[in-house]
Length: 254
Length: 357
Image (cartoon, rainbow over all chains, first blue to last red; front, side, top):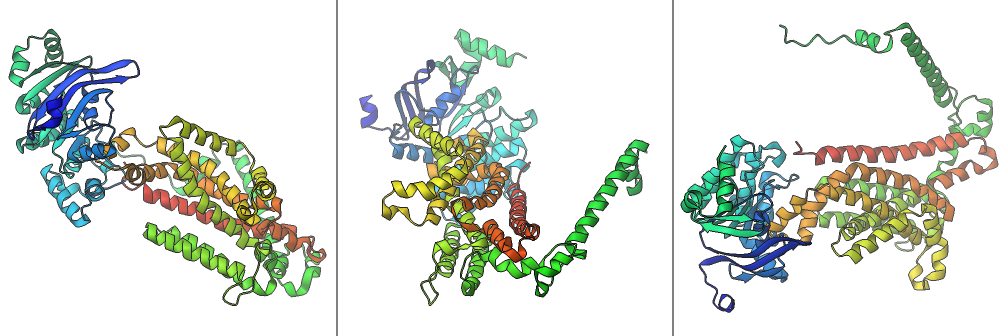
């Protein structure tokens, strides 16, 4: 523990140590330990209610952890509001239900945080927004409102909106679970591109094809615990853990 | 050709089907039509054909006529509009009304919706209103609040109630959603307490009882105490409307804003309130309309707003019979203001629904 505080390793993007989280009496996360180096891509999977989403939501303080430590990019996540703000500036998040702001155009969605939080002038923010909208292949929709877009388009806008803050870590909380099947690949393609650019990514997803292609490590969670951590090949083909094998057979065999 | 919709019936055919499908239906339709025509004719006759317009003939001409006596309006409109305000100075009261209306109309135009512009409009509007109504500067003679009356007073109380009550309602709604239980519960208690009292008793308390409780320097004129009371009443109701609107905003909106690093006030002002106000708009317009009409309750604490001035207008011996005309005239004034308000609400709804699926 002491070494962590004294010599922050610049290669480490995220370190979680002994984290616990309760909802009332329910023990949602048990002794989570996780270290993510810069540029690493982590896929988190597991049955529903296993604490995957709760874990990544703790990383940017959408949920408060009850014990243990979380250090993001060398900044400790605690009650210090300054630290929370700093971490949120550097950590982008994409949600299952997109959560675009429906009363703003796509472009306004993208420039809002850079202008308010990073204090960018509007012109600069708009140029950047268009650049990222191009990256997610949707620049022609900039003046539309979220309600006029398909689910896949909305999720790509949400990715662009998060990227506009130029984060160093991206969190994905089941980004394709709310999408119609034919729209899943357009979102995954964008995520693959992002991974190829070297972004540090932590993705909660059941897209095992994506995990095989992109992940450096797959993490399997069950009942609030990390059960297994392995490179995708080992994870999918040679897991020795009973619960992992059971989960994999449930999602792969049909 | 089978997929074509059947041809739409012509208008006559449509009317026949809707109103004259069976003999009984035809009978009911004809009777209703006859009733409408009769009432319409009577009204037209009363209001226009047999009415007296020429004030020079005095009240006598009205007694001889069968229709409305509009000459009472021509003779007494200045009392209705300006109440007890000194006769020679009533142009000031008229201009003050124009200032308040102009201020309201300007602040309803989206182009002026920036903090600085709204503040400038309100500051200018209230200053002009104040200097004109109260005088004592720029060579205008002093007219105390106790002499204000009629339309100017009604408008002033309404606008002041909204200007104070609306921001207060947002603050109350936010406090009631606070995560700290002692703040949310206390706010809830205040809101519910105010809502369970009749407006009349609140006005009465602020106008008559409060002076006994407050130190002299804190009392202010009775008019301002009444405005504070009515603003509090407005805010208590509006706070619940705003809170309802906030509950309609998806939970994920705040989370997305948090994840982007927005501060509490940025989340409230950019994400939460715009969506909450859109949800709450119909009920909000309703509340404004109710408040406008409730200004007439200040009569109870001795203010001479437009209905009280109307009572005075027909209250002298000569015009005592002409109350229907005076009330019709006042109703017309109310209608102009309230109907404009409703239409503005409809405009806002259209404007805000941009981008909805």
